[in-house]
Length: 113
Image 1: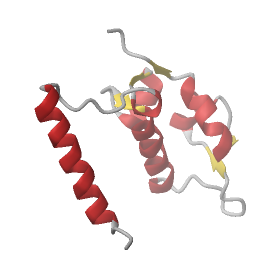
Image 2: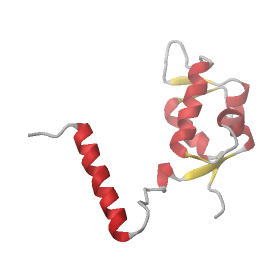
Image 3: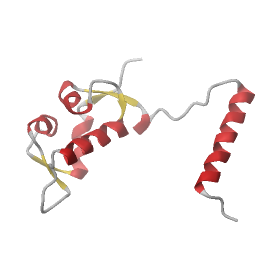
Image 4: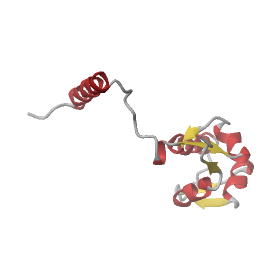
């Protein structure tokens, strides 16, 4: 019988709690790659805030900004028409959603440990 997502989640939580009890160490989640905190540049901080955030949250906040200000092209929704703030980040008036992450990377730095 297939387990539901809820049941599977509860089982995984129980297993993680059991491991923490046995080892005495806190459960260490993955903190690399897309979940590693990054520091936004001053230009990007105008959109996403100054705090260190995981890269996934930065992308999410940029998308929220794009949707809030209706910056997707009306005919081709894959194109983003930059306003003044986004133009500082993208370096041009229009970019595709696929090249957006490339431009964001130039404005993200890993915090010094």
